Image 1 (cartoon, rainbow, N blue to C red):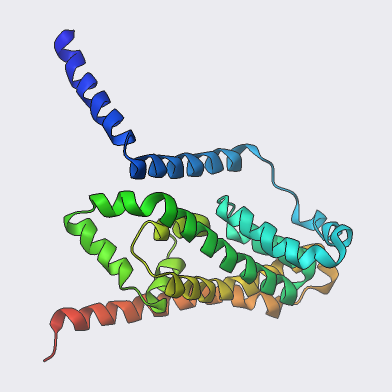
Image 2 (spheres, rainbow, N blue to C red; image 1 turned 135 degrees about the horizontal axis):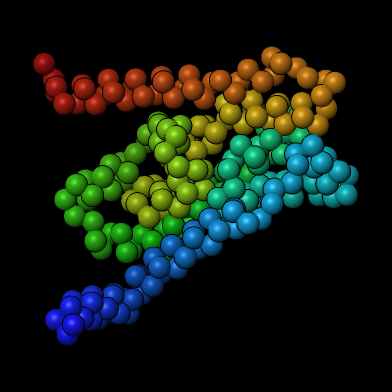
Length: 237
């Protein structure tokens, strides 16, 4: 019994020493924050997008600001961007809804990146080795095109990717530009669908066509990335 307890005590002491490091405490806070958002997504009910247009009437001229700021806060709280964009389209229509959804995406990307950089970057930088260090270097060298590639791949939600990027050595301006460009096609399409939900008599099916552009853009970007990687590995002939 005593022998079995010793490894556990050693791990407890190592964990206690780790938590005494400021970077580890900040990283633990980031993980707790993400866990809290995940629990909130499971227990907090979402409103019906068809009931949302009344909110714009109650807010008056402040509705656009509330849409951008509120949408950004929802995105950093890990609410799926699809729901936020549908809601914007239901409230403001396809054109304004798409514009406000993109504004919310830009603000959310900046907030998530800043929180990830503040709480997680030092912890990650102190511990990455080998392949992880090379991966971190890849993020640090990323251009707008590289950020678009990651954004369009179905690997994680919009908010979670923003936090993750903040913990890497990625540069903020390419990250923000790539995030907005990658979000544009589906923002237009889902805003149009959201507008159709609130006004079913005025559906314009052609307005929903841009929703398919995300898949097309993903295929084009992945193909171009594959060709660039192949060229890099082969080197000059």
